[in-house]
Image (cartoon, rainbow, N blue to C red; front, side, top):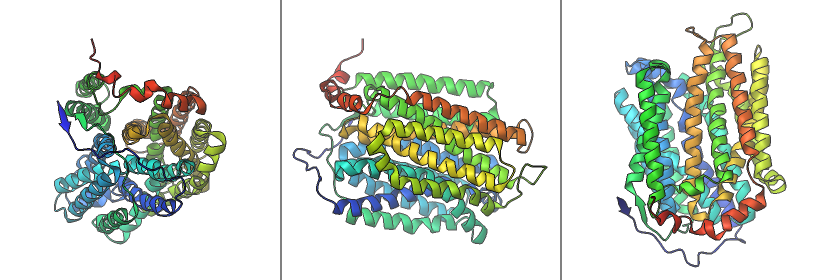
Length: 493
């Protein structure tokens, strides 16, 4: 089963090696576009208690305002990236921003929680702006400026999540939860207008067929897996419901991979995804997502917990958000230097350093969290580590795949971060309460040290990445060039 889609020709597409004006317009525009999506990721978290009260709903139902967003983002990201590779990145970016504006307006006007959840699911489709932006950067900017530009956009993932919590806490405390969306709507409209004016069109892939069956199988796999992860604390890890849903998700995953290997033009080229550099980057994505989302649970929980001995600060939502502000500021600062660091040391070495610094920040957080200053220092190092690691990880993926697979490859990396973040959130919540109804000092330390160990595994996985010369050789090899058009056309016995 396949879908026929029109594709524009790519022959003779110019490489803008000398065009510096594009850097001055394209990068800031895409930065604004990505920031709108990233801010929306965590926007509702500080407002959940007020939403529960005003819409008369339960915490478990309100939790789907974040879960529904993540599910939609996970499914749509590689699809949007693939469609961007096929139909044109600028065209898809405009469509996605239009969808985002509709979803945001629906959330602002929502009369009940069901409508609000539907709006959040529609907003989740905007996750596709990340792989589309990475692809536009690769095709539009001079090659020497691509690593730095990708680094800045990638670092926004760490900046926006933390900054979104701070800004949303202020909006909710001073206005109401509806203003989270009324303020975002004009941002989405402005981003759409900026893309129309400043972002150039890009080349598309000549082939215009992809497997709809692959899309359905991948969606079933991701939805099943993420729902199971989201509900594990309520169902229990040993419950038949949880085990059964995970088993079904695994079965769909196997069928999806089998189908991708059979079709002529796959939705996600599995052969490219199993290259050492890409595979290691995606494994790192899972573990770094675990680390970033874990901090978004640990630090607010510590800040909001009433003081008991040396644990807890008794802060409100704004105070909780301010403890994460050093992470956002440090990540924003380091992203300005990532391009130079990568040019000198390479993406692999920068990713190794990012994993080490992030792991160290969790070790520091677990050992020293009795004072706000200590936590602020730890989150500052977290921002530096996440900023370097995210930027290097995306550059590693982009360097390892052909240009016409940039969108889908970075989309798969986004899925890896989402899955890791979902696992990190649920496991951190379980360890944090340590079998009680409230966070404990022991649970906080255990969750911090476990995350540090996970990031140590990420460091080890990156050691398997080949050097830069080997990555370029693999990407440019004739086998790599033909993998999607020839190898994938062969039936599987």
